[in-house]
Length: 404
Ligand SMILES: Cc1cc2nc3c(=O)[nH]c(=O)nc-3n(C[C@H](O)[C@H](O)[C@H](O)COP(=O)(O)OP(=O)(O)OC[C@H]3O[C@@H](n4cnc5c(N)ncnc54)[C@H](O)[C@@H]3O)c2cc1C
Image 1 (cartoon, protein in one colour):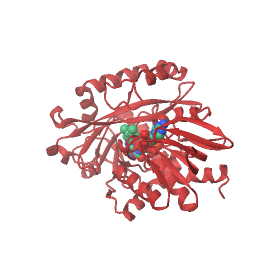
Image 2 (tube, rainbow, N blue to C red):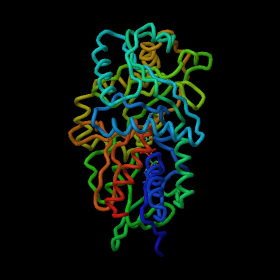
Image 3 (cartoon, rainbow, N blue to C red):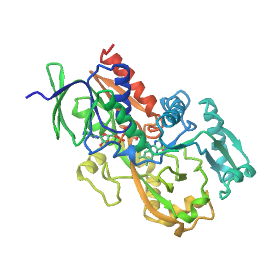
Image 4 (cartoon, rainbow, N blue to C red):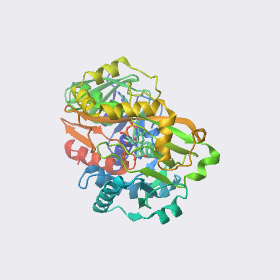
């Protein structure tokens, strides 16, 4: 028996898949759209395990998708939350130089942020830094007053409500297992049965390369999972962090360095670090998947990356296993912090695309192939940018799927 039929099926009910469905239905109310998700509700993976920061667009190369989408995304995300009564707080952020040698990198960030037209961005001196964050130590900092925080699980739930309200279906517990093409229609075999779709959008996050391959497309990259681990601050120490406190990041990596963040979840977080995970959804240190691990180590790009970055990799592992090393990174920002102020927190796993030559892809990567769109790299600031990315994918789909 033929499965339920759709015009567009979107794989993955993360914040990007749901935003895409929402935008498609907004522009095309008669379109039959389904979101197909393996887990039992939305935002179970990256979208529900992140720092909750609404980034303002400082770090990204001018002219990149990240720069354009994040700057517009910050404004649209803040507005969306306000309009939909999702608690949001524009608490502002400091990126702090703590040593003389970091100053040129801080100035370079100021230049980037200015080129990206980040609102209100400016350099602040130690006196003003103390007024913003009394417990930090810094010789110069960048202040981004428009950076905010939100719980992205609530944002994803609001997107899901809108998808349903506009007539879209969301099928949970429906892991995509295989894909067939029959008479111009894609048949998606999932754990909950078969669905047919004229076109497919792959927003499968940590599994996006596998889903692309299942659909017969060459993703050109492989997803390497990097776990980010957090500590939380004890309640009586939360006063040490007023907003968002970040270090100057290492420009060789797409990760921002461990930071201290207020959250809308009711606690203050420290982290995340960035350690290689041996399972795509490996949230705990002991999580291991032979299939995922073999896939990582048989990829030439992994070895090329490892040869170049083995020192950083080992250092991150050391910091992951030794609280004292993690604490030391945090004390660079807030010297008063002590080991007993930190309790073990949660974690998230980043879907980082790596090319065959071992490059960690920096920009968002969205590829259109044979009647399908594949989102192959959507790490941070993907949640901040989700309204803009979803609109962008919907536009690609309109053109590529001839929806107009
Ligand atoms: C530690 C960490 C911190 C971060 N901090 C921030 C931040 O502060 N601000 C920010 O803007 N961004 C942040 N990000 C990035 C942000 O979370 C991501 O960019 C965003 O969540 C990506 O959304 P997504 O929908 O692409 O992926 P996901 O949320 O991972 O969704 C993909 C979905 O696809 C489903 N799926 C996979 N395979 C299948 C299959 N075969 N069949 C059916 N379903 C499938 C998964 O179950 C999942 O629900 C952070 C990420 C991490 C990991």
